[in-house]
Amino acid sequence: MIIFAVMLVVSSFTVSASTAVRKGPKIYYLDVGASVSVGVQPTPQKPKGQRTNEGYANRLVALAAAKGVQLSLTQIGCPGESTLTLINGRNPCYRSVDTQLSDAVAYLRSHHLRDVLITIDMGFNNIVKCLANARVNSGCVTSQMHQLQRQLPMILSRLTRAEGPNVTLVGIDHYNPYLADALNGNRGVAFAASSTLVMTQLNNVLTKNYKAFNIPVSRVALAFATYNHTPVTTGNHGVVPTNVAKVCALTWMCAAKPYGPNIHPNDVGYKVIANAIMKVLPVSI
Image 1 (cartoon, rainbow, N blue to C red):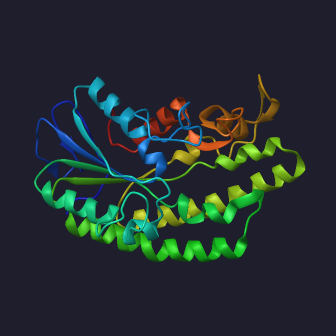
Image 2: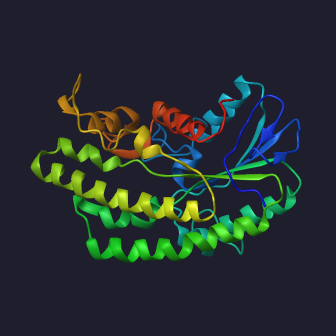
């Protein structure tokens, strides 16, 4: 069983110094997750958001292609997916007996001897309901973190049991879209700060569980400068902390209606996530 970080070069795909994944013309890329995993953004047709081909997975494919590596992308993510619905289904994407998890397991079994990369983008929808109406519901956060702590190892266990010898998994942590609330007066500043504590707790739970399975974590929170409070001058909002400026620049949270506020990344934000994934790879493509 091989679960480490992915190393892509033009002619080989190597997982560690001691174990080489066999060479091949194509690497199969399975993208597992929720709305961000399928590039959801507000569009003129659907201001609340719809799937696009500008997500981080699409960007990762382009980055690989620029170096001569073909990633054959399959996206099975579902907007609104949590670890609970990933396991049990019962959501708009999986209404029958299958679930995103069962589809991922089936994919791994059907690609058993192939070179496979999997990115896993889960956890945010476990806690988003605890951050409604610009306030943190502490009891909800505690309950949902316990649920995540129970369910994520179950998910990772099923994936790793199903994988073939040439599979690499990469976990993704989360930026905090609610930093944009700091632009909304004292109450917004307080909520931005408290929501960051929740997102930090979430990312700590994710990292702990990914590390338990030897899965590297893409540090999206750091890529979005989540903890950088250095003041910067912006064209639209004057002098604000760097983390607030970043979330405004990389998501739709500060966009005018009807497109904002929207928690999803914009084109530039998805590029930043793709680059953050690349940073956990042992070598550049």
